[in-house]
Length: 326
Ligand code: HEC
Ligand code: HEC
Image (cartoon, rainbow, N blue to C red; front, side, top):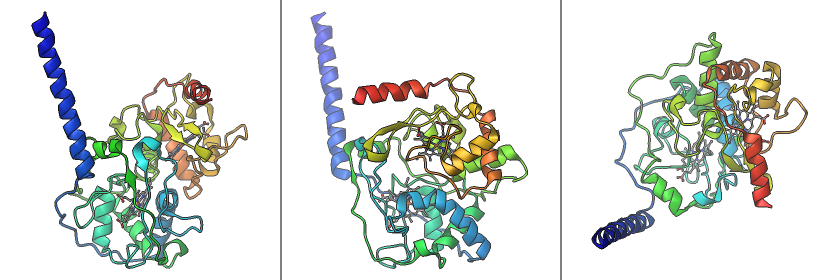
């Protein structure tokens, strides 16, 4: 018996030592860098239609994380990120050639938006990747970044650098990874098929699934529907004034699903205006997605009907959280 215990002790000791060494290694090396990528040669023609579409995507994506309080994309502090991930700042993506992205090529921008890898091989773990946004939509984002619109005009400012916690650094050595650059064209959805349009708008463009599924980090960005807790909600986020706010269960589960309690019109109003049917306001970081069309948001509603139901009582969870924090 003693022998077994001793063996077990040594075993446990070695595991603890190994974990300790791994943490020390991670703390010293930080976020891993990758091989310098082969940047594709892409030259995006700036057309009014692309700038307009790019602006829609930018309004529900890029602006949220990169815009300062004057609506310029100078980068900012990301206060809604839970504290265990560290203090995170986005970057200046205005047309400034030094502080912004004025010197990036179109290919570099598209490569980065798909994979999370910059031209020098460095990896940006917190910046979302966009593997399923169509080629045409990504070109539209680039056209918008190059346009004469106010938010993207050069501003020579620089936000603070992010201070990633050891937890975040550990994640970049384990589950947070760059994505491969797609080998073939990513086509847009068939806009006459509400379910295809809904999935595309919710998962590829709106990134709704990443806040409304089971985990903020452990997600399948390419095959989004394989993400655990897909649209079952329940992630605790930091809302206005540091107050916790839990993401909603958007499945059509009979008891705990929220979307089911809405008519399509009410759902469109909630997502676009940020107001529930009873008049209450949706809290930050659920920001109104006014840029999306009624057709797109209605399509999300149709798509959510087809998503496997998940029983997850968010009301219960939010109440427990509020009691625990008191
Ligand atoms: C969830 C927040 C978030 C969203 C949404 C987001 N970004 Fe970012 N972005 C970041 C963060 C944080 C960084 C800095 C990453 C780092 O330093 O590792 C970043 C970095 C970048 C960079 C690299 C800049 C540099 O100098 O290294 C580019 C380019 C960029 N984002 C473009 C975009 C575009 C275009 C969109 C919209 C399609 C977008 N981002 C949406 C958070 C976000
Ligand atoms: C940054 C994270 C985030 C993203 C992205 C996000 N949501 Fe939310 N959503 C939340 C949070 C947090 C709440 C809860 C707000 C509250 O309780 O006040 C919420 C609430 C909702 C509600 C209201 C549920 C209720 O309580 O009545 C709906 C509907 C909704 N989201 C739909 C969407 C759709 C559709 C998208 C994509 C277009 C989306 N959300 C994207 C975080 C997010």
